Structures are given as structure tokens and as C-alpha cells.
Image (cartoon, rainbow, N blue to C red; front, side, top):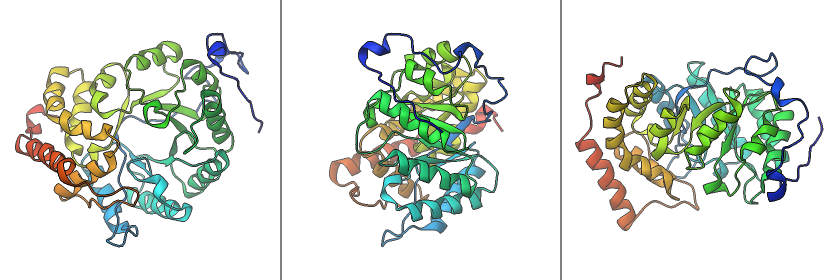
Length: 337
């Protein structure tokens, strides 16, 4: 293993990057590029708590089991929605073991990696590999806002010290760093970096990624309220928080889009959109968990510093949820089963 320190200044980003090997040699079929079958709807699942805020493993695994039976194609544990940063390393490992056991190979299980240092991220990634998790969704280093070169190095070091396939979570809106096309050209040299959760909120980036890399990366839409547009532009999957509450509707949108039945997908999409926008606000975890509680699918309990929604914020989420339930679409008419 070795480290490449990059200097991606504004000037250098406008110039071609000297690669470690000829970029033209990298294709989907190259023998040492990992192949993964990640596609469809992957909910970023919540972590359920008891009243004393200890982890409620029974409720967490029951929720995971239910949404798999309702048709989701994969599970993201310990993402932002799963309150990754609110858990100790030991708790994270225990959650992943419980999720892996209940999933029992039915769908891929990916773990979020959100650590305060690259070394901590490497150690946690290796723990995920030892447990038998199927892949990683890796975030940039937490607290400190990296620049692009630092983020690229962070992802490189994790990839080089762990054998699992990796999805890069590119979310500059929330985490303050955007790994653009030139940075991704460098990361494409790491054979186990196989996927991107694209969350720049700019759908043009999806087309830019396909233009630059063809199908080298599996690209997931990562912003709930532009997910349908992302699927129409070629994303092979959708990572969603509100899928925890409405998995059947999420899967129906994906299936209809996959079949090119966009007008039918739009009917569900327009019904779903007010709910999906709850996944794009700073208190998205509280919003999603409150909806879970209203639906009888979980508890709204979160760990501090997150606090339960109150007042107008709470009333707004309850109104959106209740209006959606009152106008819920009969999915049977789409004949998707």
C-alpha cells in the first residue's frame, strides 16, 4: 500500500491529471474491476431505540425484515438516516451483525462509513469486511471539511486497505466537498471503488459521469426529490430515507422507470414528492422517524443532539404524512407483481 497526495487546486483541476495507468485501459470488463449487482431501491434504514436510547435490536431487525419482504433491493445500514455518528464502534458492529443475520443473504447489505479520521475509517471498514458485509458506502471524513484532494486521498486509503466493494457518497451540499469528474478519474483506478451515490442536487452530473466513464461505475441517485429524474438519466438505483415508510411506492416508481413507463411513474411520483422533500432538510432523520412512528413502522426516538420535532415543524410533517395516506394510490393498477 502507498499513498498518493494530490494537489487539486482550481488551476490543476482544469488540466489533465496524470494517471497511474492508462485510463483507456479501464473498462467494465477488465478482469480485476469488481463486478457488483447493485440496482434498485436501497433504503437507508433507521436505527431503532428503546426509551433509554439503547439500541432496540428487535425493532431494528423487524423493520429491515419487513421492508425486504415489501420488495426493496438492498439495505444501507448506518448511513446518515441510521445515525451513524451517534454510535460507538462496538454499537456499530453489533448493529451490522444483527442486520446481516436478519437479511440472511436475501439482498446486499452496505454499511455507511462516516468517521472523523481516515485511519478510523480504515479500521471500521476492515471490521465490516470481517463481519461479512457486502459493501461500503463511504463518506468523506467527518467534522473537518476536506478539500477535493484530501477527500480523494481518504477514499483511496480506505479502498487500498479493505477488500470490500465501495460506493462513494458524493454529497457536497451536506458534507462540504465535491469530488468532481477529475477526482473520480483518479478514484476509478481503485478496482474496488465500484459505485457512486450522486447527491450534488445537479442532475447534469449524472450525464457527465456517464459521458466520462460509460458504465465503469454503478450510479445511484442520492437525492430523494430528484430521484425519478435521476433514474430517467440512467441511474441504476435509488438510495432513499422515506422508503422506510413507503417501500412499495418506492419500488413501484423504480420498476415503472426501469420499464420506461414514465407517465405512470409520474402519478406516484407527484403523490410522493411532498414526503420525499422531508429527506432533504437538516432534520431529515427526525422527519423520517416521525413518519415511521405515524405509520406504525418504528419510533421517532433519536439520540441527542437530535431532538424530537415540536410545534410547527412537527405539525407540518404530520400534515404531509396524513395527506399522503388519505390520497394513497392503488398500486395494483400498474400490474407490477
